[in-house]
Length: 205
Image 1 (cartoon, helix red, strand yellow):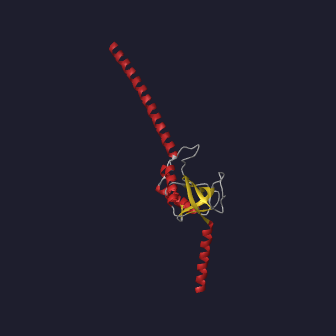
Image 2 (tube, rainbow, N blue to C red):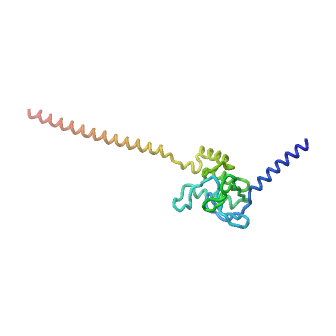
């Protein structure tokens, strides 16, 4: 029985050791925005792009600042600055670098997945899923919860279909009102003319 217990403990220790080796400890260097940062890995400065999420834009060259962009940037910056330990993890099913040479990684602050925290706060959404990534299911679960609670960016989501329908109804209603009003005006004027004619005829006779 003791041998079995020892084997089980050894197995779990082995798994934990493998998990630890997949993560790399980094040092915070610079804030960039909600889903990008600069860190130091093995004495080298690298830019990291948080895998599988997208936060509202704040510094895009062609897109103006989006709602909750500053909040997302501040949350990420504060999380990284205050963290006692920052780790990054590459995903086996993802490219290591994007087209801007940013490292595509999972980011952990004090053993918490930063991507998950951002989504939980309604400051990011699941995005850029090109394969079955390691923590995707976690993110999707948190996103559903944030959506149901209408937290952060999900409180800003606009149902454009409903708005278009309301606008169409208003246009139709106004058109009918104006048409009906014009019809009534014409009818009233016609009645007035007929009445005047009859009055004149009556007095002539």
